[in-house]
Amino acid sequence: MRKVFIAMCLLILFMALAGCTGNATKPSYSVDSKGTLSVSCAPVTTSETVLFTNETYTKTKIVMHTQSGDVVTYLAAPEHPRAAIVYVPGAGEKPAGHEERMVRYAAAGYAFLFVDIRGNSGETPGYPFNPQRDFSLFEKGDWPQYYLTVCDLVVAQQVLSGRFGVPVYAMGSSNGGRYAAVAAGVDPDFAGYVGISTSDWGLLDSTIQQGYSGDPVRFATSVEPSTYFTKITPRPVWIFHAAGDPIIPFANGKQFYDSAQEPKTFIEFSGSHGINTDVDDRIIMQWAQIYATRE
Image 1 (cartoon, rainbow, N blue to C red):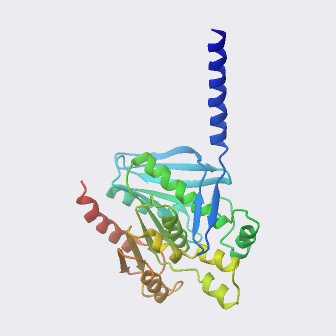
Image 2: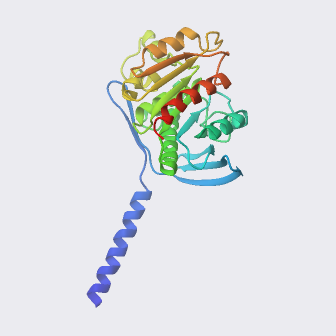
Image 3: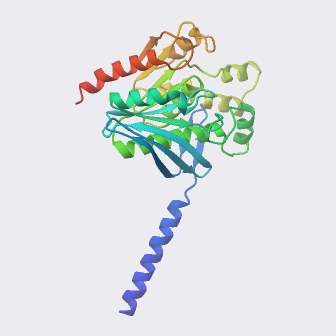
């Protein structure tokens, strides 16, 4: 009996240590010689607060507790969505500006998760995209915030996929479309990519024109969204751009689309810059055709 007792104690101790090791897993990243980012994101815990619920949808605030700080998200979802969206906002976009949009997608049968990304002047701490600051971290082997944000989006995909068991798309507007493209390329579990009023940063071209080579070029390549189109295919890509966009020229959006792989769709929408009701109409209409055939 004493031997059995000791064996059981050792087994319990081993299981406890194994659990501690799993919880202590640290995230890691690598950038290959072609400038393509790969990430290994540590598991996160979440805290959730129900903000509103009715027969159509439930809205919740979900805080993802990552090893590099809390990331705030807002989810609007019907009970049984057909698909889900990880939405990455443009500079300065707040959840309050998307209340009607979140309700509309939920009513159409889609879960909509607004990610308050790092440094977007919202509830999640951080700094606006700063290539010099991030490259300095990259040189030291630390995590650039850009890569942390990509991991946040990957984890958000996992949260939605685990909860609903449906296809999850990476969608972003303006700067958010850039982050979303990288996340969709890095994480093959995203069902596809939707970019709105977006393009490459232009950082790679600028870096090369200034005569840099080596690590600066490798880093610049790693943050350009078009780098990941070869990784996204054969998953679908939708690019939306307005002809009169005053911030990211239409020609830049078209060039961005041209660099994407098939299957891809380019849609010119009415408006100026950023997601609007015309974009919502077109996405919901297209996805209604896709998911009607799967019911």
